[in-house]
Image 1 (cartoon, rainbow, N blue to C red):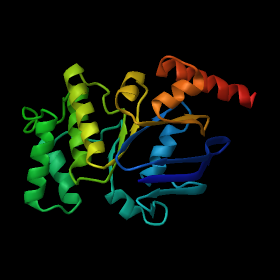
Image 2 (image 1 turned 90 degrees about the vertical axis):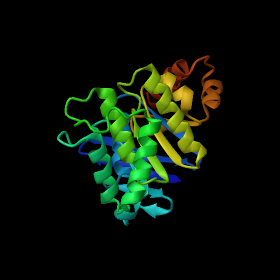
Image 3 (image 1 turned 120 degrees about the vertical axis):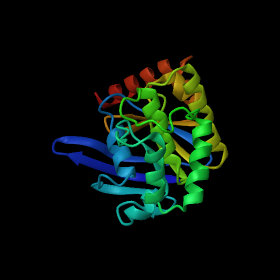
Amino acid sequence: MIAVEALSKRFGAVQALDAVTFDAPDGAITGILGPNGAGKTTLMRILATLVTPDAGTALVDGHDGTRDPITVRRRFGILSDAKGLYPRLTARENVDYFGALYGLPRAQIDARRDALFAQLDMGALAGRRTDGFSQGEKMKTAIARALIHDPQNVLLDEPTNGLDVIATRAMRELIRALRDAGKCVLFSSHIMQEVSAVCDRIIVLNRGRVVAAGAPEDLLRASGSATLEDAFVALLGSAEGLEA
């Protein structure tokens, strides 16, 4: 479970986060939505213990990332938009290396990796160097690497970016399987179709603040909209009006 309370961060004159508060429970997929500059990246970096907040707390399974970053990192599986693969290593070697970094025994690495590769249809990629991989192939390898240690909390930043229709369906099934296994899944995407397809709860950020939170149907009802995209635009417009 992720519990964020009054989280704030400023970079010079820019207030990236302003008293952001929300919970992301276990056994649920929580979506983070917002326009460019809303604070999504800063929030993700704080949760990943890469950035220290100015105020507030971000607890992961009760552990404060500012005070105990190593424990928090062990409890997270993180897929960032950068991917960060080693190009001279094969897909298998990239995943195995991170399993070893987490201290997993060889047999457990093999079993976990083989299961993930089967789920993601990566059999043909396993022995190839990641240099030259397509965007979708890199994404598959990065998600397998993020999940190799079976983390309780999973942070996914644009996980279907670059995937074809078949791979996108497989990724959705994997994300739902994580939820059904009781994992806490935090899902960031700009694609409304993806959010509506997989998210149980949605947090809408704008200018560093939470402007709406709830299940997709709650946002539709609050905005009087028929689609999630219309609700998103309406909620951002309402927030802008209140600030004017």
